[in-house]
Length: 125
Image (cartoon, rainbow, N blue to C red; front, side):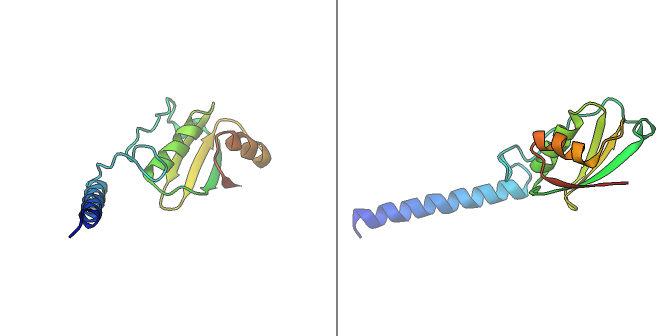
């Protein structure tokens, strides 16, 4: 066996060990990052006013490209950072239920959410 073959075997072994380690960490919920490069478990910004009666307008957003809990947290945090908005994201359905304190036109919401890099389809309840 020559030195090149030994180096290839060592490199392959390191890659296999790394892959197994990362997979185990992901299944245990301790992965350092998600598909979008953010921590898999990320704190969601809490809205101060969580009384639904204070939010008379409801919109349902279908969010494109949301694949992990990190993505969902990013979307929810982006929406919750907007004035008078409270959002709850459902990752499984790729949807966000957005409650607002004022009435918006769908076109205005699309422009506003585009600033927050949210690609979406919006419908109103």
